[in-house]
Image (tube, rainbow over all chains, first blue to last red; front, side, top):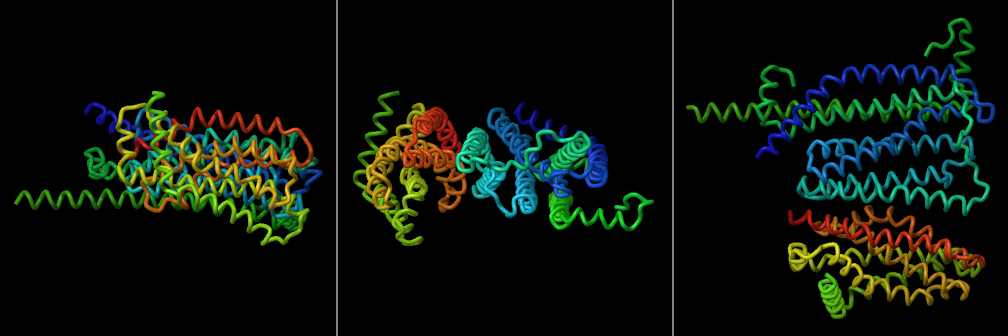
Length: 247
Length: 70
Length: 222
């Protein structure tokens, strides 16, 4: 009984906390993205090897980073959910998965759009793009499994186990794909590797990456609040908030 | 995006041309914008739907309360 | 613990011996898939030899996928899986026994048949030891990983496509190392590197997959 109250309280507290910080995060996120876009598209100099096409890096690399970051978030939340049965962790994992899949899709399509001028083909079996494609499959499987099971509780637990199995496999998949890539293309072109990126090009990249991260955080917090509202719709704290017109 | 005001039309044109890579660069940024806008939209809709659900449940409860009160 | 391991292993082997379709169907599937490739791309021997390692491995992988779907199916339907989960015995050991029995029934025949399939695809006879060694370690790993997916989807009526979606991405490292071992053998290179990587994956799977399988099965009766 105590645990039940405790759980309820933590959802309620999270709702409050997210409510307070979301507006601030939204403002900072918009600022970072605006400055990052301006500095990336206008201020940053032209790359002497790739011309203007390198500017795709400012959406491709942050998307790729987010795709992996969100999977880590899901795996971390899944572990917490399985060990401590914390409902909040499951909700965060649940709302994060479609966004992770969306960023993986973005990383793939912008990578393809970058590959066309650089490699001359829309798709190259490059190690990073291949890993990203497999990550998309993992996301799709995760979401499909959660939706397929009839009871939401069973779906949540099954999805959590799958996420943990996936996260153990991701380094293995990544390593094996890289190994496969060097094996079959001895002199592979690693255009996406920019070892000595100039500082004026790096700053916008970091701004955009941070902006993407905050974008995810803002949306994740808001979606989590929505799910909390739906699950707690008949509790007294939601009722009293409704009466005060402060949902 | 109004770039450098002094340089005028030519620079703006150059900016949008992206050194001949306009299609690839603007497709990438456009696609990113569309996906992020879709995520934002789904967040807003999800919130509206949740609030609607809470209101409906409150209504059902208050109705049943008044019925049992009579 | 060892006693219950052996008991489960024996029971599953006996049951399987009576149900022939369980082990025969994936085997026939394997043969047909391999046969389709020469029909699809033409009887050019050199080309076939070149793609043989990949074709044999992909076919073995699909056959494993097909077979693994039935791993828990009949036990779930007749209620014996529930008894196993609620028996109080260490479930990780019991599921390891089940997977091993399943591999002996479906994986081993596939292994024994693969030299024949290699000959059909004009693979050099000298590469067959590498093919067998890689398939031995690889299919065992695939069965263990696949069993996680089978456990997660056993309560679904039509889990087949979902199962493929869940576990095929996880099969990729095994496919890469397995087929590259055969490719290396074809080129006359050493295959110890690939085989030891496959061995490492197999050990990892033996250590961790039973935990995930047991956890997945427990969900159903919680």
